[in-house]
Length: 178
Image (cartoon, rainbow, N blue to C red):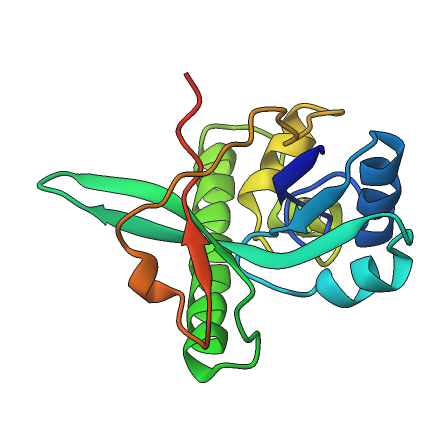
């Protein structure tokens, strides 16, 4: 059985639409794929509508959080099977998307100050409504053809799981890449 528990669509920083992600998963021979876009669940409905009959889809999302250590360590927490309408989830996803957008615009401002010919408008055009913010779109602007895909997907449980709240949620954290 082939399973990918961490896949992004264009609802955040992936390169395939939610429907395209389902087609790619099926073409790769996956039996199970989790759609885990950054800080939103906007890809769930189109992914489920396009799901081939032989493919199982797990609904999830990737949340930014901080590890509880003496150092400020940013980690991405994967949550599965949560209620996307739960008020805590809606509030956290809204906050994270806004934070991501602001961070991306700060990057653009620094690039402009350094004399790089880029604008917020260009970045948002590249983003094309993506909900993950502008940072990934800056990468796409600077490196045409850049992709966020990775073949290393093996989540572990992680502290901070209390941020994923609703009946029967399953939080995990992907390990850092070497």
